[in-house]
Image 1: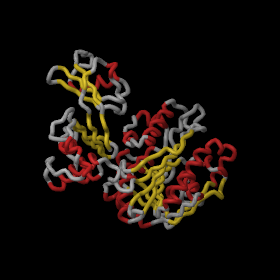
Image 2: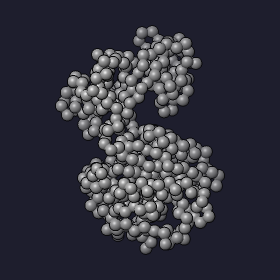
Image 3: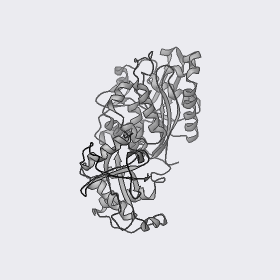
Image 4: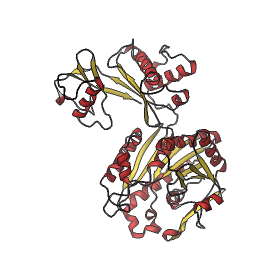
Amino acid sequence: MEKGKIIYGALAPHAPIIVPAVGGGRAAEVANTAAALRQVGKDLAEIAPEVVIVVSPHGPAFSDSFPVVDLSEYSGDLRDFGAGKIGVSLSANRELAAAIGEAMESSGLPSVVLDGEGLRRWGADEGGHLDYASVVPLWFLVEEGLRADLVYLGLGVLPYNQVYEAGKAIAQAVEKVGVTAAFIASGDMSHRLTPDAPAGYDPQGKDFDQAVRDAISSNEIDRVFALDEKLVSKAGECGLRPLIMLLGAMGGGRFSSKVLSYEGPFGVGYLVASFRASADNGEHRHPLVELAHSTILKSLEDGDISPEGEVDGESMAPMAKTRAGVFVTLKSGGQLRGCIGTIGPTQANLVEEVRENALSAAFRDPRFMPVSLEEARELSISVDVLSKPEPVDGPDDLDPERYGVVVEKGTRQRGLLLPGLEGVDTVEEQLTIAKQKAGISPADDDVSIYRFTVTRYH
């Protein structure tokens, strides 16, 4: 097993009622959640990480820093919920805890290391150091055979991009210490699903939960970062920041994600999801994506921003005989970092088309500063290969999920929109945006319309 890597992650709800000794007869109403948490425990017992890192939204929380708890061992129980015999006690990996604090500071992130006295000032009582939101998921994992050291993190209530960067710093610390690790993000979804929900009712609560579920089940994690701020505020959740930290720790999109269960019988959404790291950071990437990434890295390392180079490998040989339009999209921390493309072929072959547009996306997109070498190493990249655009008679021949669209007026005004874009759900929206990109009035119907399909590679 590869050392120095976070190999598994999980999003875990933490309501004490999930534990049978607390929930009693009502625990049956969340039996699927309990079963999913036990599955996470079975997964971890099989994988056998050396360290489990848990972040809790109900442990130490600060608005100006990320708390790291540094003790020789951690313990906690559910005595406040009438189940004092339900608890966990785990040894700590103090080397990793210290390394996490150092990595955050090196990354320019504010952090605070809490020892026993610091925890007492925060409010930990004689019941132990771990808050209930850590004890609940850890209890299920230990019950299923998890044997590992622990690192316990509180939550920094800081902007999402900093939370994501904190996750990346955690991964850097794991690499430095050289251990295999798992990351548990303790958190619930919306607390406003029903009229009797603990935080009141909001109909958008279920929309938030569905959006997060869809992002995880489709492995399109970028959609988590694209959540509307108003939707998030309406949800009344406590799991988004732990989830974002987990995504940073797992390395952007270099993993497969799976929803194990979801239910909300008490007005709170309980979502259990697993995240498994790829065996190798680039193992599952398509050769065109590898080509785009290596082109950007090579240009930065060599200082020569040009698309020239030899075609390597049998997998690239057929692409050297193909011509097509290509879009290369770069994302960093779930946010767009560059996107440049061509409607039709402009280079000798598909290989050169990808190289040219990868460099343009990284260094020539006028909306962004050029990508740095450090950023380039962590980029999430997709390559869209376009079919030849075909003319259509009108909107009835379009479908924003299936077809991209090109609108033209004269020889100078042309706008393109790729298919399957978040928030573009109707043909009318698709055409309006494409016209706006071309500088054409949305009310102007005197345009030529073309559609095309896209083969998307990750």
